[in-house]
Image 1 (spheres, rainbow, N blue to C red):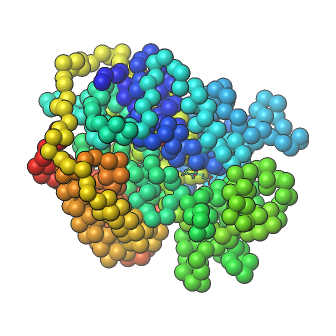
Image 2: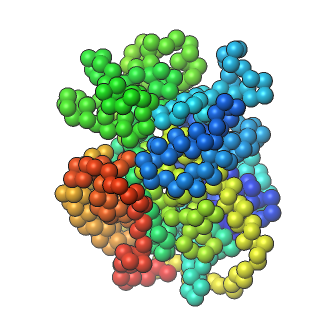
Length: 543
Ligand code: FAD
Ligand code: SIN
């Protein structure tokens, strides 16, 4: 199969880029599950951007730099803060039903939308659609791309690895498994874009959907791209603690609208940790909760919004209200039991400010990319904004590359995928056991608080798992579970190696052996040329 641009991923980053490119080019979008399955559809709080005349780009920049704990790239921050507003306006034009301002006094006829606040923001600048912003954005984007004559969407297609030209080493597309037909084939493209989302499924407890297995990061690393800042996995402070609903997020906007974190005895403990109390950046709040849970030997803390008017709560947080009610908690009357959970991958594929990776013809955007925006900790609601802004940037960059018309080897034919000497797995338990072990090791040893000893132990375990997984991969028919496990194990290794390199505590990375902040802040850049030992080729060669 051939296309002009292959976009791997159908979240906010992939779909907004597809829409722009499709004006002039044939675009193929892969989605490894249903087209709407990915973190984007679960986003609650909203999208950060300077939209209020009393707010300023400078304030958004400063808040992002402060949350990022000295490790953001100021150029990337300036780019996102400057362009987030116009990309949000494009979503408004497309018809995303953002919530309107209800308060008559605060209504501004030129900009009728409600802006909420979240941790670390000095101003109300988060546009939202109640507490289902991601679903509203995804629904609108999907409706727009679905019948576009230049966009081919392939759901249930998981990309396995990138295809590099044997001589020029340019990216020529990807090998893809059609999950419904269990067939592997190659898609050749002039430009390939990784928009595969994050890797929070590496942890036992996560707010993320099943798609967040770091596939793009693992594929890029195997192909030769640098990967940066993987030690900074963000833990969201407030996921619902309930045996039946462990991975449901309680939006930070609940605290933005007045929610207070309490101990079981009602004490509002965040005032003891930070002068911004419940609205301190996420790393601080998650660590405070972890500390209180350990200190008091409790399983969770409590988020309280019951002091607000019940209608206000139901209108602002209809999804959270209904979901909590379904498990027996009326948030207008009771507190919500919450715990931190893995939420966002701040590091990723090293890209420049043109969204280019280290490999020619290969781009990366959205959560899979490291642009320098988030530094050591992401500011709430900056992720959707980053996805939108870097999709716009990638569009300009790819259009420029098309215009330059650099020679592309039209005659290149990828080697066909060889499945002649592999067998169907007799038992699935090996894969599911490895999944559980990997996620538990990461949660126990590479979580909110780390030590050198725990990291060393984690690395040993993950490397053992990698050997087992690779052997299995070489011998058996491919399934998406197996491909994702192989990727997660690789990404887990990168997270640990990065954490070991950082001899300080900064932002989301907190190591008891190095509790202080170094004077010099620098990103952790892992280079596969120095670190990646490709395993011996499978005896039963695949391609
Ligand atoms: P995703 O939306 O995760 O999409 C990834 C896509 O890649 C999916 O289509 C997936 O199927 C596909 N894919 C992955 N691997 C492969 C493969 N190998 N082959 C083919 N396809 C593949 N951020 C904010 O800014 N504001 C918020 O309010 C907010 N709330 C959040 C709430 C929750 C519960 C979660 C989980 C996240 C939230 N975030 C929020 C973070 C934000 O939603 C994500 O960072 C963002 O949506 C990522 O978008 P993306 O396009 O990069 O990836
Ligand atoms: C939330 O609604 O709390 C999530 C916001 C984000 O991850 O940016």
